[in-house]
Length: 127
Image 1 (cartoon, rainbow, N blue to C red):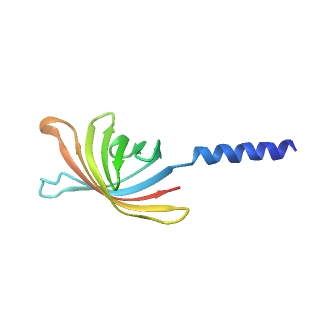
Image 2 (cartoon, rainbow, N blue to C red):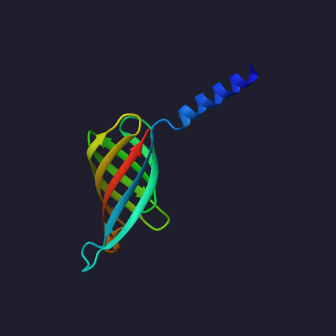
Image 3 (cartoon, rainbow, N blue to C red):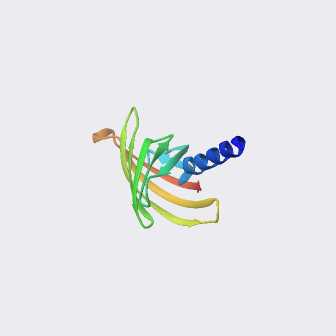
């Protein structure tokens, strides 16, 4: 009986730990004013705090918070080197069980004369 209780506790805790978790991978285009823009791949994970707010990590932008209404979102990122602010739009969202999405984001990374635009095309997977 103790084993059944422990399995039930672990299953319940796991359902809360992984609820509203999503993973993403994207192509980032920066240095858009240059003759040859820089292209890099980013990845990350986020956890939905409620229906419109999430907090997570992105390999390019660092800690990332998003605030969304409908398919649009305001994005704010913090890393050791820079801060960023941007807008995102989710073009497609669907799936049962493993939800997928396709999004486009534009973030302004840095401040002042050193600021650079970062355009990203993102594929997301969530539970």
